[in-house]
Image (cartoon, rainbow, N blue to C red; front, side, top):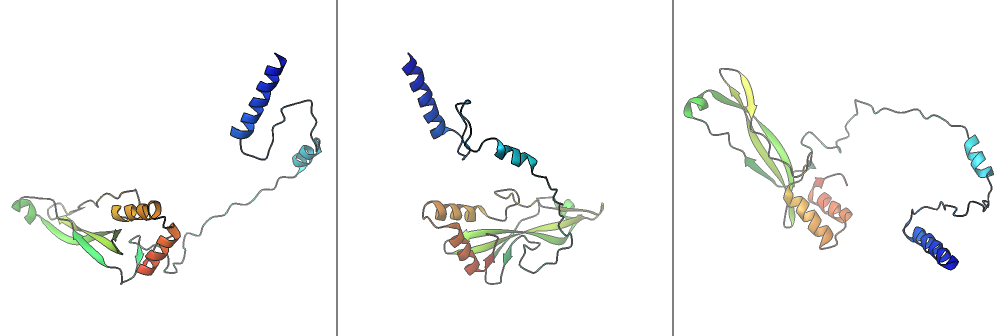
Length: 186
């Protein structure tokens, strides 16, 4: 009976070593066994003075160098083709149409991937003014795949296929985008 409990303790110890916490700190199973370093190490750690580190703030007026994300959210040069997609006004009667005036267009940019190239999709949405009430309205921007993302679904799918199927590392995909004229953060 004594050997079964000893073997069970050994098995439990091996399981803890194999499946337990992965750190260099070892738990002492036998409390009667003394530490190799004694308690002096714990005392020296407790005696160390604590120092406070002053926090910092970012400057609110950061000077742009031209390499940051601009107002469109994407950085690309003139060599990247753009495809403009006009979003229509909501359907209205002739009487309602005479009451509005298109005063501007809002543009939303998305980076799309086509076989062998990248394209910027520009969604142009008219900003209209209702003449009698002088209120402004616009068509909502199309939903992004991920919140705050400037990628089209075609780009995300292409990145995942290149990474998972063709084992193409992300840094090489990033280099390919830079070579195509699209500057994004790695």
